[in-house]
Length: 440
Picture 1 (cartoon, helix red, strand yellow):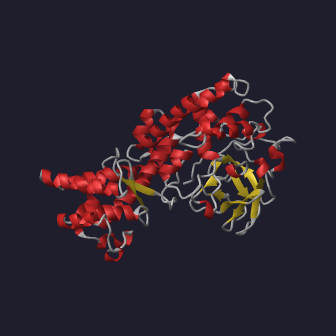
Picture 2 (cartoon, rainbow, N blue to C red):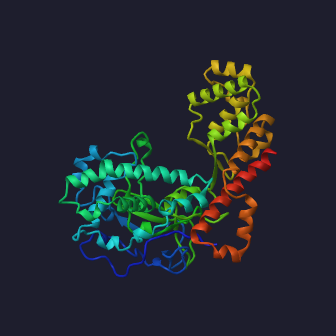
Picture 3 (cartoon, rainbow, N blue to C red):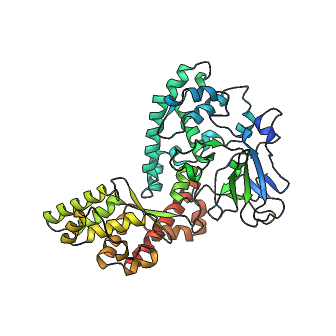
């Protein structure tokens, strides 16, 4: 089944002379073309000729990028940089977009014509709350969206609106809207790029997001066949696999689980396509599972003492999660240490605590999918109980999902949102049920 990513709408014609896009190859080369046909979504890029790995698909000059530095109020945004700091780090770019959108003379207007319709974006933040909770319960998405909405509202009223009101000559009243700001946050979430830091810059703050015309047309697959490369004067999209004539060109948005894809982009990769998919076990769920095994108050108090010690070691937290992939545990050290501390005999824990958590790394096997069956029985039981508790957070069980997916007629009658949510839940449950089998 095709991936249903929501991408920009087609707009006919070339960019006007004098606009930043006039210097960008759009479509860039004879080898590729923007098309509604042959793509997994309503819009994408396909190869018109066979392409070999390493071939340049197109290049976007840095002059064509839209960012807080290249917009027409870049100087003001830089001058006010301190006042525009926020948790997201996106405020300057969002203000740049708000200004350019309402400016009749903006040289970015041809680019805006290629954007998706802002009022029809499929991010879960735009779903009715009841629908979001009903379809996505247990996946972690409703909780992430609620945090997003609270942060967007706070950011808008504390930073963005005061800035626009302080510069009424630059922002007319029609763009002073929380609704529009939320839509632009979703657009930046789905369509912006973030230039990676150099290795020697790892300690620096991440680069600010920027909009990259042409590159934002490409849809995503975990098994992608193209990748964006950064250089001093250009951003280049380069083939990473052979691409036959007529096949779609896919970029990667990163190694992203389906819950991240639907949260940030409004789509998922149908099972089993997303090899980067994961399932989360909330850290507090492991604590709850361990508490189930206590019988007296002294045991419960000792367990809380163990948990507090894990918090001190920064292995767990009240809002953290252990991340389980199809082949490996992405939070291996944290989960390994948690199992060890919660399951070790009381006297051993006292000694372990006195040593501030120091241990000989050679004394245990690493926690991998293939090694789960070799773990101590107490560890496997705690893992199993944690998985069972996690599965209880979903509104439906795995069999119900399998029945829907196996009935093509019934599946076809589901709405797009229902299909996306079903694929998300099913992928997570398949990972969790694999763990049930491994820990039995």
